[in-house]
Length: 145
Image 1: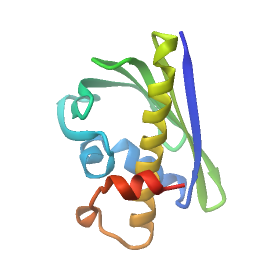
Image 2 (image 1 turned 135 degrees about the vertical axis):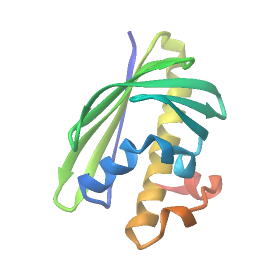
Image 3 (image 1 turned 180 degrees about the horizontal axis):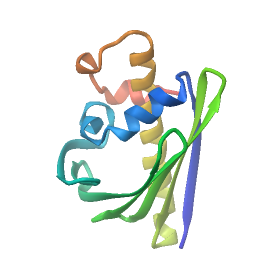
Image 4 (image 1 turned 90 degrees about the vertical axis):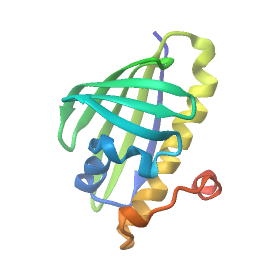
């Protein structure tokens, strides 16, 4: 099964980054692709996204270390995050396993946008912004480095 990984160092402690990614209900606030989330049962969420409806089922969660979910309705079979503290920063690795090798290009773009969305939101929060005041703006996310 093909696999894809992206890494990014974020200017926030691992606890803060983990808390953001562990709060599935907040995904519509900052994730450029997610528009709505409904919790179906513990560890199971229905996501309305720009690319279709996805059911995300958490299968592993080790706080501040890693998270893994399987997905239904998505080209991604599994998606996960690995957290590595770097002093007052955090290196986050997003990875995904998917069925078809020819999906790699579009999933690489999606992973990049996800990481940029996360970075812009984390920067906003770490500079004193309140999550409820955040506005996800595609142009700002696209320009993130």
